[in-house]
Image 1 (tube, rainbow, N blue to C red):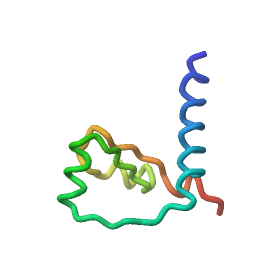
Image 2: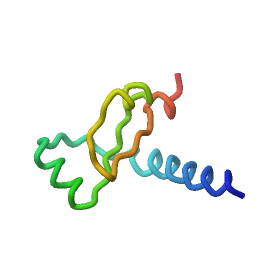
Image 3: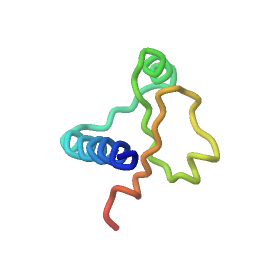
Image 4: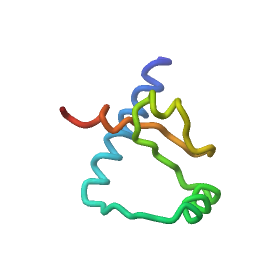
Length: 74
């Protein structure tokens, strides 16, 4: 039960992320605006590799590392 309790939500989240973001446009924002969004509850998704993420990342509660190379075909 423990593994499926974690795996299913992760798979559902990744599926939702890919499905709903297919028609989205990329928006560039200023660092101060990003800080304000994080403080108001938005999530920060870091798409770098795990190794890059562990070398250093933004200090925030709502940060999530999903390596882009992990979910894209080669």
